[in-house]
Length: 106
Image (cartoon, rainbow, N blue to C red; front, side, top):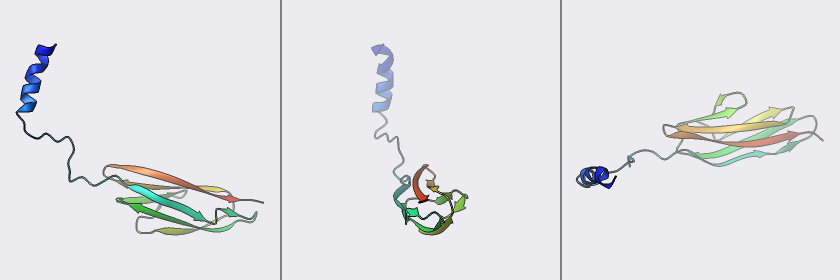
């Protein structure tokens, strides 16, 4: 077994610096804040301001509704029932999501 690995070690040692990751790639997107204000509404519903802070994203979407919110940092939502919102940030290296729930009821 050792004899089979020796040529591989010799080949890699002759390559100089071997980097497995490209240093020029952008970092993955990060959602640093996603909030609702208020988080609770009376039984008749109302409006809540959703706000977010995101870095390293190429695109942002807000569910429900599949809204493209890439160029925004907040959205005023009118709701009549308890709703969980999901913010998804994406770039070429991946995506991340965060949720916030606005409760409607007594």
